Length: 225
Image (cartoon, rainbow, N blue to C red; front, side):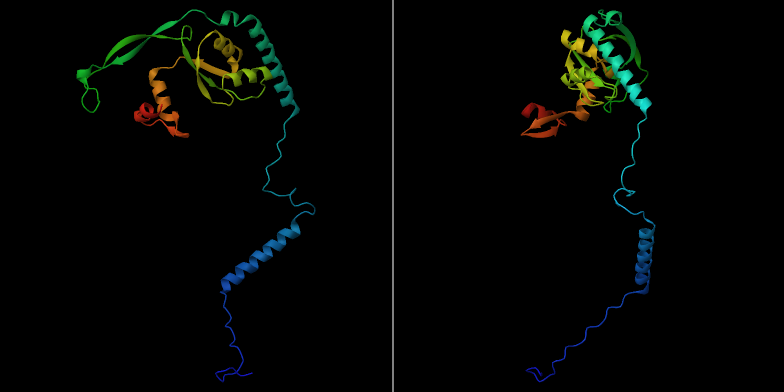
């Protein structure tokens, strides 16, 4: 049927899009490779034979026995320390040692903070144990392999629930006993002022308007904390 303009009703044919030969060859190779893999794949559930899954972890019976023996020995130690204390291994006397440090006079330091000339040395006394300290820093150094349930409760009370976590603790009689109970899992002691400063600069955070903000400036502490 002719249109209004007098032309015929036939629609113009659409031109075929030419595909490069390299693309067709690549598609053919991929289809052939896919068919070959499907032919070689074992029958049954594909999820069982999926190579992307994690390999099966096999634990030998000897490892179970070793962990059970380790847990039993730690339970015996926990009960002994809880009943009799640390006995002779824990010292109640404050021990002091002497170390030699560099001494730089104020007039020997320029504006850049570089020492001029030879540095003098001086001897400084320091406490080598935690006896008499008001605050100690404790770090959990082991995972929970072979850990009894009572040790896990004490570590949770000390806020040392994961490996490599560290906390500042008031070193009183109660805290000292708990640290003795879990001593195979933690390391604790006094910390220097430089260590505390470095720790705050790297990991120190505070709550400002409900958000966790790093303590990068003293103004944050003066205004918000």
